[in-house]
Image 1 (cartoon, one colour):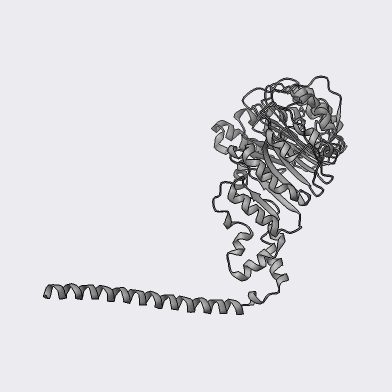
Image 2: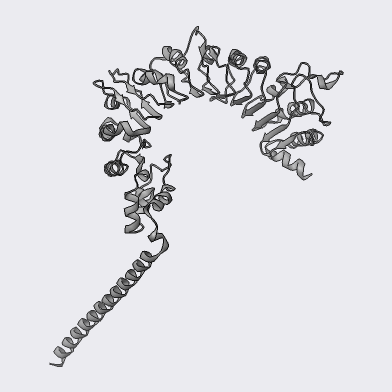
Length: 489
């Protein structure tokens, strides 16, 4: 009997402890509810809660972004954009949902969860212009099976899209450019359409109607010219990024020449393309031009055909930096430089320059050049060697025989020991410690930028550079680590 009493007592004690725990939890829940009520009351009486909806709209509009900068690999996408505002309080959620300007920049991945989210954004943006970015970071997302349903989601809203950025497999193009109808995008201003054209397949595609399109970013103009060719004449910014090959390279010069309004152009050429006997390609409004090519590309064929009378900046990028620049490439740009009397900036990157003669010819054609940048070029000193006038006994202020007499800014990146002596000689020859005047619009050097680590050079080269620049230090601005050493001396 005593044993049974002890068991019953132990069971009753356990039940009492459970009751106490439940009562404690109930009391804690009551206290939490009271605190939440007090906080809600405080929020309800806070100044921000009493703001007019128009003020909320102005404040929240600062959270809206014109360009999407989200990471496609991000898992929790609720932490971006207006989704964050909706998680603060019911009041903020109501104001955010009723502000359509917050929902106009759509970054979506071809995943089921993102597709459902895109529908919500499309609805909440009402009738405002849209900026759509379909992420393609994962190659698996480019498949027709994955991408086609997502494109179908946006097609009814094409008339509102202002900016559209996507990458597609070639087989998905008919979904976007249906042959049975024109794709009408009357508000489209920017289009980035990167097509994976590894398949050798022809499709009958519809045409794009986008009279406001002025920024175009593609991989192969010749692949989609039947779709968007009518828009080329209005494009002001053109980017053709690298593609292993072009479908119809023989029509590219004609397509490029049709971009009569283009002002900024960046072209990356496949090494498999070759052009022969081209007529001049006139780009009457072009201001900035970047040309990139590989070693095997016969660049001289098309470079010699380019003409741009309003060109102001030219950037040359040889993507095979370890290999020597083929002959005649720099020389083939002379016609372009001569056609551009206002060309004031030249950047040469990754060029292993084999012959000073071509450098001399190109720089001679750049008569109005003011800025020269040499970036990671082997034998880059040949540029400044061509610009260094020979020692003369007559008055220095004549500047007779100077190449690029208006040159005032020169920059080097990644110097080698062989660059040091030519740079020093150039700086001495093109500066005037007395700041004298020059005739015929010629100018002395104003800035020399040497963007390289001091200890990247040997000790002898460092000493030669510092001692050589010391005497011209007061006449020009020396930018970079060497300039800092000279200023500290």
